[in-house]
Length: 398
Image (tube, rainbow, N blue to C red):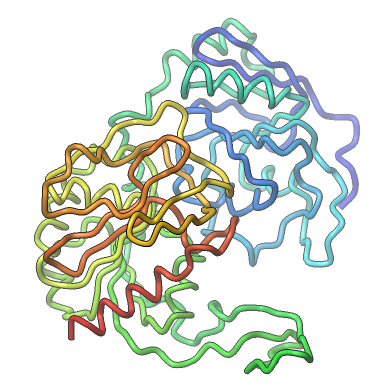
């Protein structure tokens, strides 16, 4: 776990508008194209790298130093790295963290994902904010010069019309964490607090508690911390493939149905919209991120592409019902069009930065959703109460 040595080579990041950044390579020696976006979180790079919602994208971090706490496999949001490339200002080659299992460079190398450091990420972010999201090429194997990298970006597929859900959804149904070992919340003992704690393998965890509700979760690219949060709030979760017919889900007679986060363009998922339409009036439903956008389509509304998206752990959202403000974790490039929603759908939350829809509920059925991530990972926990709201909705519907 030492430094990477002297074998590192020049890398190129080229945008479709002709802007080119030159830096130094790390991770895998390869070339990738995809939509480039930026995330403003100070921490959580491993969760970002492994979040299926980033499928098909190159991600740049605005925080200037990345990799300083290494990589711990327990922090992964899925079984693999989903970003196509990683763009940073400075790489920390020697992490300082007792939980670290390997440095970031080795993690990306193992995953076959290219990285570039030495990029002026402030200038890159300003360019994306001004011009909007763009396709880009990250080349760190020397196979393309700057002009060829720009041309490769221009030839790559746009995010609009893309269906990456089919690449990240589970092939087979499964029950999440039946033993309860994956959902326990690790903690440090605080003698001043009267907490119910358990010790396992020398580590201390909050007591998990029994399950109270049985739900089915549609996997559009579900994050592990969503599954952990559901289990921590008393949900027994069966995860199903995104193409599972509504009739099969309803035949299981769950207490509720959850619609997960995921990547790509929600408008391209007509085969999912039609199934969710059949569920809305029959069971309590809770959607997060892409699940929220899918519900907008199932309600008869539409979605649109944001100029540069919302990605980070510091987005202010207002609850229009209470007037309260929450600082939220977000990761989306599309949004529900509030003007397209029918009268029986109420917008409950808005983004205070641009006024876009961040939450909605059906006025007649026990169905609601949020655009942002109440499970955080990374980010604040201001919105974790939504899992309790889902439980309360199920109780009220029984």
